[in-house]
Image (cartoon, rainbow, N blue to C red; front, side, top):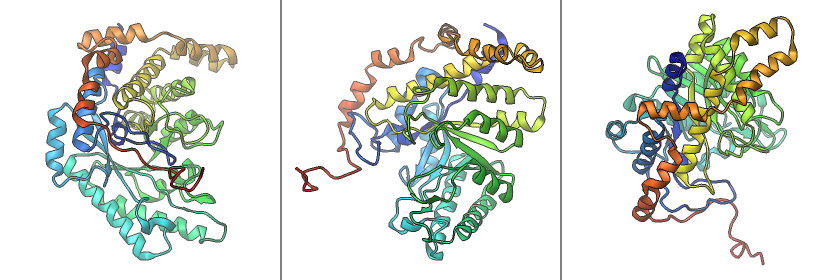
Length: 400
């Protein structure tokens, strides 16, 4: 194996989300899975299984207060003992009753203060766990025209973000996520990458944009957004998933693998750029999974997500950059396109099996997981929790 290729593949890192190991689903229904993690300690145990089998997923993102504990130093030690570290801290400013009209953009100053206080509490969690990133997603928005002053909400958003930005420790970042629509049905306060980018520019150097692959309109060219933000030095991270119609949170790479490959192609290009800003930005991107596995086995689904990212990255590394540049410079449209598709169509599985063999990892991580009996053991130990969420049961709703 080419030494540079081996070095790049060994350095790849994918952060998995704590919430992906528990019972989670859609607003309609959460189907309980045997052995699904019941608390953050069990979530870390499951994440350690993914790391053991892949070798590239040592980071685990937390969601506060879902993963709240009394002693975060103890949690940090527990993770470290399992070959893990705490990744991005994700505050929750969308579930409390007070947030019906928004959190940091709420017209009620007291609610805004409550939301900001929680965000600042999460900054303290970052300090205690050694996390580098504060990952911010807001459900804030309005349902009807005239419900609130849109410009006032924009100013409230910026003020809240600025307060949190200025409280971040050295070498920490805030990653500002956006979403095209939902759960607000008329106007979403952080409605696209441009809104997030504009806030980040105004707030400060520690503010960067987070791109969630499910948060765009159909047909949006996400890799172009990635390239733009890389060139601006403002791409901070990803929430990798896949969607068919809206924010479905399907396993990354399952609906549009070529899009995932093209995104990685831009990231690899950026990481090798002659431009210092672009190169540093690409080399510090946080690669995170954000998925709610509703009908899939939790650990196996997470493994598939990580492995799909690994395959897309490996294929992007195979792009003949010199040949691509030559075709682009002479305006040979199809030749340039074929350079990309040749790499995309390459079967990288033998390459990755070779890599795993050199690193002492299972050649087939999913088979190794199934053969290990891990899932049967945790199902026996943890049992099955009751599912929930979404619309009420038909009988209870009086529907026959």
